[in-house]
View 1 (cartoon, rainbow, N blue to C red):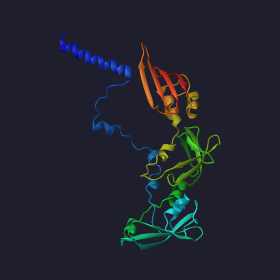
View 2: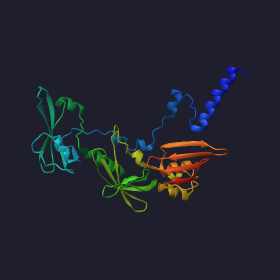
View 3: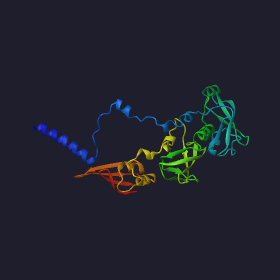
View 4: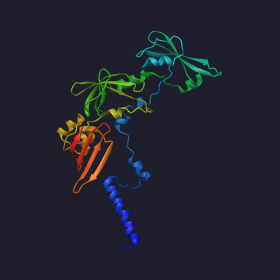
Length: 306
């Protein structure tokens, strides 16, 4: 063998060994066409509230808003607003006025009346004509009651399958519970500025839980319908999973003998995976940022810390 050939062989062998012991595998080039093929299609859950998500707050006289935080007083012009508006109050647009800024610009001022008849003035940064052409506006620390009513008509009394473990109790304390179980919507109420919809639900055991949901198409908040619910029973997608293991999965638990897919369903994707090939098997260590640890041999859970 020539010197050049020996060097080439050594480089190739080093790459192979490095890949074996670090768990890093070479990745083939992915074309634009393949990327487009891998993009997920819109699911029925993605489009379930699409018409409601696209509703925009209107400037119609009488449009109702629910106050979510008394800090809304900070965005109103000084005057009668001080101390008079509280969370849960309903504001209704009663007039669109104009005001002159310090630099001589004309801007629109929206006047809202609350439950007690007090008028609150909200100064915008746009002219009255520009605002009326736009016909929509968002007011800080409020929820559009029209959108809440639309969600109530769509979801109240309906049964869905819960796919998140996170929820709130009746005291609004964040907690966790069973997933992939049917829940019935018993009430739809105004939420908060970030998650304008509050859902009151009961599960198949009669337990009460509460969820907050965003319904704005451009919202960066992750808790939309598709991240909370499935329209069909998730159990039907995994016929190979035993009833015993599925019961553990719904409770967010793992057990020795579970597969990687079953563990992923139960507690989610790991934050780190370390693969170490042995003489006759592949060892895999999953670790999570919250301290959970799972050890697999050939894809079967052998030991864990949960």
